[in-house]
Amino acid sequence: MNKANTADLALMDEEVFYERLASEHRKLYTLAYSYLRSEADALEAVQEASCRAWMKRKQLKNEQAFTPWLLRITINCCMDELRRKKRVVLTEKLEEEPQEMRSSDRLDLERAMSRIKPKYRHAVMLKYYQDMTTTEIAKVLNKPEGTVKTWLREGLRLLRNYL
Image (cartoon, one colour):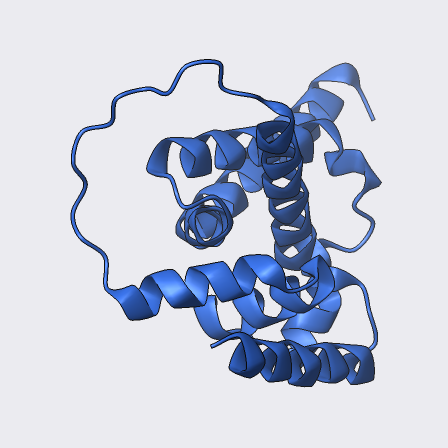
């Protein structure tokens, strides 16, 4: 194979990567928003996940696993951002513009979700916020389906207790 053919294959891989990434963008944003609850933070997390995926694209051995792999990277970016935010201590309280009133049920649900363990929260968010099947969740979280079902059951039980 000559240099031109090798360059063409690399370019094609790049194009395919960006097409696949673009087709998953909405799903990535929705997932990031469900974790971060901020449009700006969600967009930043998707951008970071896209960048990480691009840098690690050669590590993906099975092209069929692209979407779960990409979702996992996005979850990791969201968790990194949440950890970073916990470390930030605000020295002055910023004045906020009045926000649209949220229903108390939604606030209660958000508080309850923040109280359950991350493994349960991941499973519940992917199932009910992303409408994924247990098989798809198992691929994203890289866990057996039985474990995912247990996490869902336990996560829902804890949510019921908190609500």
